[in-house]
Amino acid sequence: MHSVKRERTSAKVREEKRRREAVKIVEYKALVDKVLTSRKNHDYTPGALALTTTLLKQNPEYYTVWNYRREILSSIFQTQTADTIQSQIDNELQFLFARLIEFPKCYWIWNHRKWCLQSSPSPSWKFELALVTKMLDRDARNFHGWHYRRYVVQCTEKATGKSMVRHEFDYTTTKINANFSNFSAWHNRTKLIPRLLTEEPEIDARKLLGNEIYLITQAIYTDPDDQSVWLYHRWLVTSDDIVKLSSDERKDLLEKEIKSIQELLEVEPDSKWCLQSLVVYKGLVATLAGERVESSVHGYLDKLQEIDPMRKKRYEDWKTQF
Image 1 (tube, one colour):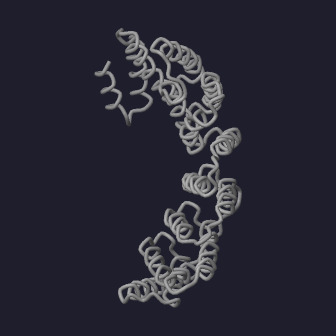
Image 2 (image 1 turned 135 degrees about the horizontal axis):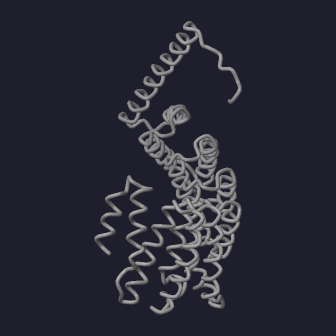
Image 3 (image 1 turned 180 degrees about the vertical axis):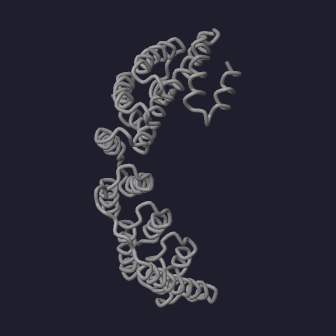
């Protein structure tokens, strides 16, 4: 931390630390060898399961060991009753919860949890939804959590025969209002809105589009450097997923958004997302009008090459397209 004097570590202390780490490495390698040997020998006993538990606590990224663990559990389940299987899976879910708290962005833990629920005689989707809600409260931008939430919602809908689209749409609104910079929440919205319009035909789609553009404009002005808000904005103004606009209507919408972005550019002259959007939208307007692209687009591309040199060739290519 700042203003805290860092204590020097003596050579003796460093050597002792290195020695302890060397011992841990030797022990870890021995454990890995033992687990892999057990798998080679097709050992599917509770003892082998305990070995994988020890190893995965140390290294949850070892996906081969997760595969072996599923092989062991599948073998054990063959001789158990449904109640015993459920008890075993409940224990497994507890084990996974502890791992998720420590490693919330590990693919293999989330993947194994899905497998457990698919193997469960009576999965509790209500509990899983509550769990993933808590996980997203801890980190609202954890895309692993959002992906798992979509899976849980899909399974809940299948189990209950009831749609959760309104519930989930409102959930994304809550998360977005808490923090505009949430790529997963915006992405989820693009999947939910078409379903919402289908399931609730009384919704005025044009009004909804206007409301979404207003919301995303607030987000853009709040943080014009956030890629996620610009991608959602582009989906809104170029897609027919909400309202199928005529060419003239699409052109009018694009021109309105271009004006708004140009106003923002005056305040944020080095915003690459402003400039990129102006290039794309003015290109679309020209296409819809059957005209040549405005000369200002070339100026935007020159500016982009200056402020974003890593993508210079990309902008040069765009120039040739115009």
